[in-house]
Image (tube, rainbow, N blue to C red; front, side, top):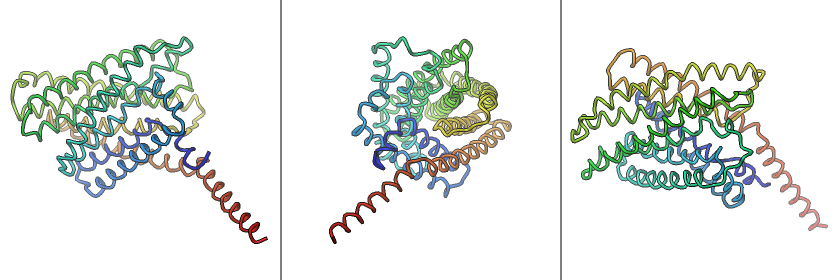
Length: 368
């Protein structure tokens, strides 16, 4: 393999989570007034998403069979929604941080098309493809399924921002946002029931990857954010959805509470896994799922604090924001250390040495 083939073969849609966590940190930094950090984080997030997209295109060309198997694999299929998430998040940042309304519309159209296409194709594959009898339910059911909810809710959140900017068809866009939020909520409740069933009746072994289960909290948090944003916009603009304001306010607290309920269990599961595994910490992109979940919950708590205006919620949001920044920095350092240490760079240096030696050898032969 050459230096492009090695990372291209390893990269998959799950790596878009890195970009999502980075852009979420940009939004969090902006909400606390750290504008210089906001720009750096946003550019970094765009850079990461661009690199992942480039490697995915190379993978589609060089390893199209492997990519096709990943896209129809029930264990990995749901991570395609990370692409919807990063496109929607980029549009939200373009609107809230920079006021680029035209760019926001472009990303909104792209996010809606991607969401519709990935949703229809994914569930069609899941419903119609032949089920393998060799697959175990404990392998197929994991927290990664919540990215279906997360991608849907981020599209709804971007739609809410678009409704605030639109000069016409505002009610239609609000209705579309409410429909997306409802679909995301419905999917969250279904996946939550399946996750509890899996954790209750199937063993959690030291080999089980538990990082994806942090998205139980992350999906609840983004559902809270969208619910609170809908409440604030309907309260400001009025219209036929005013009667739903108590419903939206209650559900915001409901999903925030579910996310909080999961946190101690996730921490206990993580500690148990480390104890059983001998405290080994091999790198996995799943650490970014933890970073994203904490960042989302911090943002959800801050949004809820604005809705209820309670001091303890404001304090909670600050603590979770600090925790999110700490987890993000640790995960970033761990990822950079892994990228420096992995054999890709050794392969690159060996290949460069081989090219150099071939050049010298060819030159020597030519002189002789």
